[in-house]
Length: 408
Image (cartoon, rainbow, N blue to C red; front, top):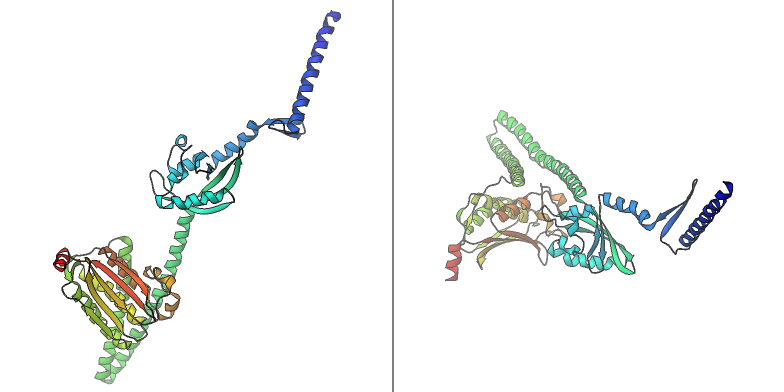
């Protein structure tokens, strides 16, 4: 029986020696880099992970990321992307491979993204990119691009981060700052006429007791002025509230623009006189348009008021003309002017430039003017005036009848 087992044992030993030799040769090949695998030494000995096994956890990690992950060719073709990026652009994952990544951004941004990709072939770059999902609102993201060598071919690895939450947080923080600034400005602006009103009422009481009718009349007039100032401030706050909520409704009718401009200028003639400014009005007659006279008067008045306020006591020119189907109103002063970097932002809410901080005000006049003008399908812009001062240009569409009469 033992004699019969010896050949079998020898065969088993030979087989084990052969398998051990093969294992050692495999390990040597792995260590020398001849085979794509990984050898990890541990308490229980050496473990071998093939390339496929080593990459699997990374694929799982990439697929579970909240960020989008994309591999691009040098021709902007998507070679790979994870589910997160497919969700960002609202496209099934199986339709993403082989498509041009620029398909998922607005048309006007595609050249910019193309330049960014060309840079990403050579160095790490980062930029904010708007994605345009198949359905839904545009999505703000950040693209982080890095050059990658893929089987000897130049390609790009991209990590796409959704910035919408951060943008919302930034907007909320900006709104809080704006609110705090507004409350500070509003409380200051309302406190000034209120304090003056209280003072005038005290003087009125004393003059009335003394029977000095002239001083009583003066105090009453001054008190009325401060009350009117407070009313205007409150009206502006209500206008902003209505504009922000979309509740400001225009009551349009055919109106003579020259009359509207003239009435607005007359309303501020006393303010101009107190500021030692002269208002010079030139207006073509017969210019009509569909307007809300009350709101348009308010908008034009805000522009004239600003010109007087910052006009440094110099003349303010107001000119109304019509041409090519539109009316153009130019209000021009010779005062402190507007810095070039502030020409567009002065029409924002609660905006005051560095050079106007000492003048007071809520920073709402031009904001309200822009909203009202735009609701009339018009436009308003600010221009720097050579030699100092500023120009505010308002354009409004003419009545069709008026436009046709001018073409005859």
